[in-house]
Image 1 (cartoon, rainbow, N blue to C red):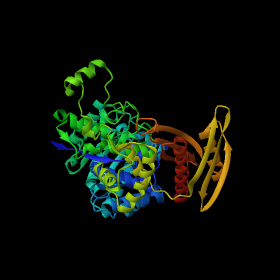
Image 2: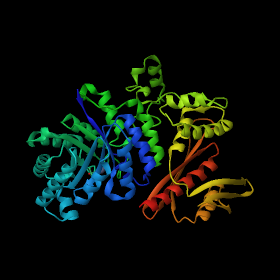
Image 3: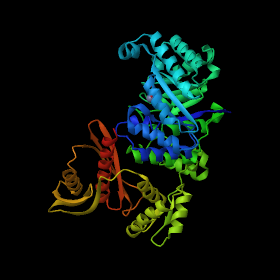
Image 4: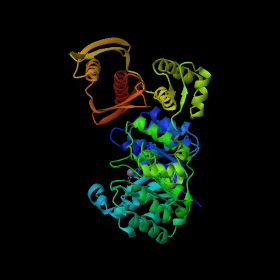
Length: 504
Ligand code: KIV
Ligand code: ZN
């Protein structure tokens, strides 16, 4: 059985999804979850692009144990030096450098010839190698690159010290049979191919990223680059959960598996969705809300008789359990701490105290507290962003014959300020008051409300995305009152935007 390495790029290519920018605390939270999930390599960012990205990689390199921590770098001296500075504290580190190789890119974007691209690639792999052992090289737009030249580049970078050569389908152009053939050709023609792992990095423009990655595995690839929920540039990347579960479910065909602890898949998916503000479509394979729902009577009949009639993966395999009532108003700190630990959150005493305070408030509003509510409480606690603005109080009035009104009291840079506004609805009035108090010039690009569990007393979760000067962020808030949750989400997004503008 071959072991296929999982290279997770949620924090780098995933962050290139519009609106998915994450702050350092959020990236660290995801990186820790990726380590629990068992990914082999975390591409934690692109160090040269901003001080924020650099700090995030450095923090992850210093704090996250288990996976190799990697930074992306163009084939340029400054990029590689910056990547090295970012990853050097990790016991397991990698630099991933890349240069385009396709004629289209070399002619129109770089305006250099093949020989010059080859020279730069080799030189920069050598530079990276002077800092560390584990070096990955990607010939960008490989699937539109002349095959003889691609073989020449692959051989030269391995000779220069690359230990992984990644074949990106940068524009999501290839199809499974063609991509499989390409990987096979590299294995057959490149003399020193046994000295490196072949990786693949597929984009989903034609909806084929997972199929292409699996076809590559069948033809010799030993590493899949992917993201949680398949997020990423444009239509996204190969989805980690799809690739991993396809390999696991059809081991008979692939004769290969990964180190992924699949019971952590669902939690990883929810965390990434929450932090990036990118919802998962209900019919998404593996992690969509409907992935394990059976509507048709014939299917339900079969399932009741024997699960395997219509179920190829059990929900428990990916960590999906039936929603359970766990705690309530009378539950104590010990029961709360124990349940958190059972669902994977071992928090420090101080964090437990904060979360327990919120739990008590919630238990006053809501009779039954489910695991999903606990996850929301904890993740709210862990989302660290400096609070330039905080909500002190709010009063809302609205009715059939009444113009909706909001009175909002905020603490802004230490001072208490208040504003009264009307709106088309109570949420519109709240947002207008906050906009006016903070004098933000950001644009609201997304506003979404969903309930975390069932019932009219459920926690409502609001995601709100803002954009200003090409920077976009998503904020979230959860409360049994969706107007309060909306105000919290908006303020959370404004705080993130302020921090982002300061850090860049
Ligand atoms: O899609 C791509 O080609 C990339 C490279 C940097 C690997 O993301
Ligand atoms: Zn990519």
